[in-house]
Image (cartoon, rainbow, N blue to C red; front, side, top):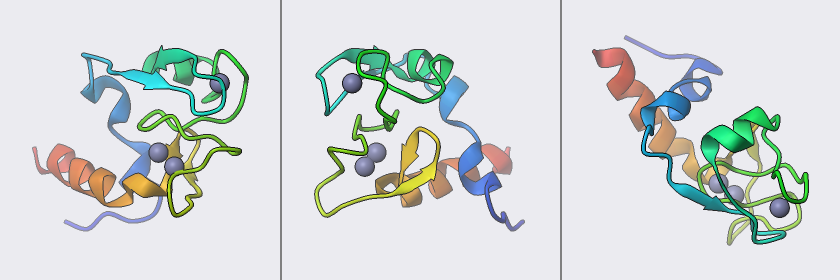
Length: 92
Ligand SMILES: [Zn+2]
Ligand SMILES: [Zn+2]
Ligand SMILES: [Zn+2]
């Protein structure tokens, strides 16, 4: 089975990690988690920056080497990890 487009990324994240791990905002050090961030429209509840739910990077404080937004709340550093995750989910 092949996956195309957004389906690669749009998927699992929320709900997969029921033991939501803390996400530390790189802009303001607010600690939250993926669900809280999702409920805030994929922004940091502390500073309202767009934030990555996987690593806490923001527009102002991107990952080392730079990153961009794959999806709201997900930066390009996790592309491979997400594709792997999506593969596992859809394989069921
Ligand atoms: Zn913040
Ligand atoms: Zn990033
Ligand atoms: Zn990230």
